[in-house]
Length: 341
Image (cartoon, rainbow, N blue to C red; front, side, top):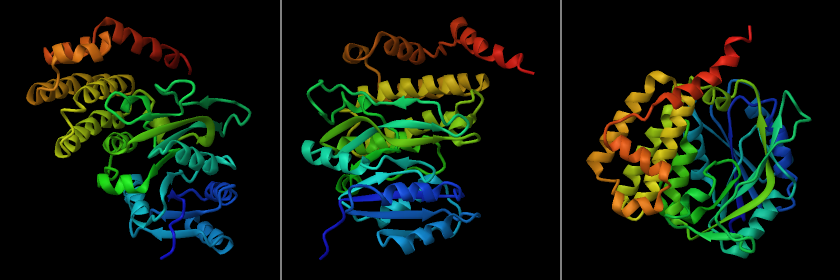
């Protein structure tokens, strides 16, 4: 029986003809050669699949699987994982690329730390401003001389939950049995929170090994506009995580971690969603907290920040906490936009 590749690089493809070639170039040129490179075409209507096939003729490590109809990013990633056989899975979007030694650095770190999941930093590439430099270097609760942390309820929020630049041991994903949820834009948050409890160690590579392309009209740009209903998915995903942890018998152990994640989710909804949706979100959160008995002040407040505890108390009491300061911040954000014309 053939030994599995060290890393399965998983690339979802949909209408990215201008970009997918550069993505594949960066992966085929990696200093770590023991790879399988799997592309999944989500029924593209441009030349994306043809470009992947051209690269297949150049590099035998590349495979292409195709969806019969367009199903979205979650279904495409699930299809990719179904076909992967590597020791680790590495997620790369088809309009992004990797620094030449990214996979070698991450795999060596995984082996040295016995890590089940790793995340690395980003270098952002702005199409409209190619000379602009901007980086995201994920932090963690590790000491300066320690490159890994144990995966526990206390550390789950310390590891960046984004899928891009994530490398995770395939056996962990199989043991968990969870996949990306369809039809939601916060699918990466779900995948992080449901797989993390099945990992033993996580490592954060604090270098920008992943190059994240920022382009106009992307889902991320629309999502952060402040008027997107898609941002409501934060709370929808939080509730899906709750159900998964209940099914897996983890909710009592991870209850405070869930409360922290719920606060983060609601604050993101408030940041990005229309005002008209805020009270409905509060009512949903209030109902869930009451029905599930999740917030227990005497047990939890020592592990929550003062702000987290205050918000949870107000929601449990049925209050929205949408006071003057909240609307003032929203108004200040809108004022420059009103005078652009």
